[in-house]
Length: 165
Image (tube, rainbow, N blue to C red; front, side):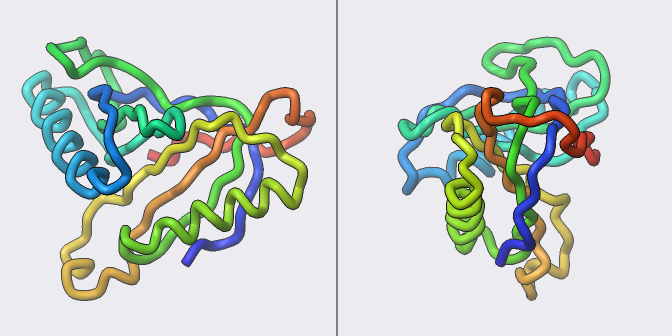
C-alpha cells in the first residue's frame, strides 16, 4: 500500500540505463534482467552505483532501465548515461510486493486528478536495495513511485526533493 501522496520539485538523479520497449506483461522480466545487465557494466567501470530505477516514458512502455550512478560513468555499448526527470512531481512510497505496485500508481494518478495536476506521461520507480528478509516477508519491499507533472502546473514555493541515494 502507498503512503500519502506528496508534491514537490525533484532533482534529476544521474543514471546508467538501457533503452527498451516492453509490454506490460513483460515488465516483471525486463526490469530485473536489464537492471542486472546495467549493474554488470557499471561494476566493470568501478563506478559507485545505487538503487535500481525504471523510467517509463509513455503508454507504449518505452522505458529506461538501470541504476543510479555517482561518478564518471562512460557509455558502453547499449548502456548509456541518462537521468530521472526533474521538476514538479507527485510521489509516494510503496511498501509491499511489486505485484501490488499498481495500487500506488492508481493512488497517485487519482490524487493528481483531484488536485487538478496535469501529468506529462512520464513516471518512474526507484527500487530499494534488496533485503534478505523480503524473501520471506515482502511487506517491507520499498519502491518510490514518481509522476512528472506539467511545468505549467507548477507553483513556486514547493519542496525540493533530493536524490535520497
